[in-house]
Image (cartoon, rainbow, N blue to C red; front, side, top):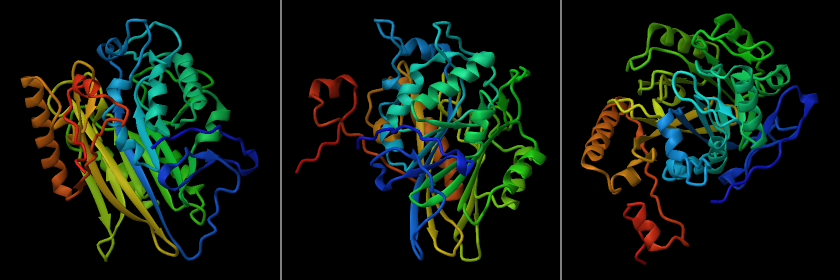
Length: 401
């Protein structure tokens, strides 16, 4: 399905920005006035959220994206995961790097990445990038300023870090109307690796008093769902820390329906909160792991993409139906592979063993909560010739009819 972005329109009188997403994602969300009301009573509304983990850019990834003419093109890395995001009404990920217009790219510990990374996010259908993480200050003020303005120029909303107070007032929180379901999206980080937040910029740090004040300003008569993204926890630890548990419960007690975490770089548990009728009303996703990185150790070479199907029936609390897609990163092109592709893609013996180990680990971990695994068949474009199909090494599933 072709998707396109339209320009963002300022509606200062409303005091916030609201997106309206059309059903079936015919077009990208657009800022409009009056989007905080729903002329549908009684009715049942549906929206699909797709949430991905940490998008990192270590130098081997940057080098892999470099083309002979000097351009940086990330299309290959995201080629096979695009169908997952294109099924979303709203797609969100954690952008754990800064973008720079210069050619002075760096990886860990101070991330500065090509601006073309934002281009591929726009192309695959990412709507929101959360930026409050421990690497957001890696390139100082210029990094925050350029990253946020580059995303904004492509119609990708962001929150958690802001170049100035104007951006803060626009995108803290992000207010979005998705098929009539009205959401507020917040983002906070535990810190910035000891780097000072540049003067004039704003980074949302985890502070329970500030979070409580932020949540108290949300009018629940005009908001159906609140999502809070945290950059938190202990790196490479597969269980949530006591602080993570505390913050998640702190938010849920204040009416937050969705809590999502990043930073551990491994998948952590998913908690589902059900009512007396066994209907899921809120969720905590403690860590989705890595969407793409150069981390190759067990549990760190992939992550989860979680789909939350939301249903809002007039006069009733929100219903949430979660499902997931495991995603593993292959070398040398850093292709993000879902099982629909990875099961039939040509891989080295070592790659195949690592892929199978990741899928086994992930499915066993997520099975504890009983979530359904999504399947997205990758079919080459109708115009793709067979030589191209064979060159990427995937066995296509053609319809024989």
